[in-house]
Length: 274
Image 1 (tube, rainbow, N blue to C red):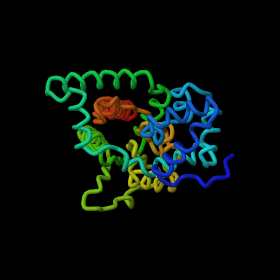
Image 2: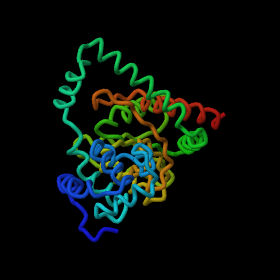
Image 3: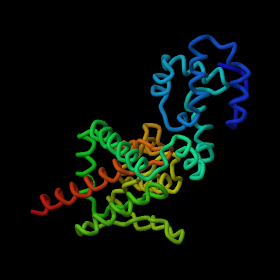
């Protein structure tokens, strides 16, 4: 392990990488080259995913992290997560990227988003574990009250899920954060929380999930990666990844998962009540 102090910012990380990359062994240099070109992936990927993309073994990637001054991959990822929100391009930059790619006409954009949606739905169909989905539906169908939180990009999904449950007369509370009001006091023993968040993860969502788990309640997580902070809470996790278009991410797969959950919960409750 390196005796250097670990970088605390992306700028320091890049300076360190520039200083030592030339003297690295071949495999570690592959890690360095990949990271230099894909720094936005570190915060939301696993060491297995990054090492595979770099064409090296996970052990080589771990040595790279240590050479950079970190205790391991999780230590390096923590630094990147703290700067992820700042790193993600603003909307003006995303529009510029689309224009540069020549995909800014309405018809071209529609075609791009349709294709991204198709790929996202195909990924969802193959990545969702049927047993996990079945367990989630069973827990939610028997819950005295379902609590739902999803903020920022996840807000449309959470609000639609709340709407669908309400229309089926299923007791649900939408923790929407409107007026900065905190409704965590409505969570009772035996209730189930659906927490929806994607990188960069909503701290409010994570905190409510922590609160629910602290009461001993089950948490159903709809999130994007195995490194999501909701994983640490031993939440029952449904993973969904959206293919982006110029860093704009639609919600095709996530909304499909949400309405599937709602309909399955309604059907299961009807069976239970008969």
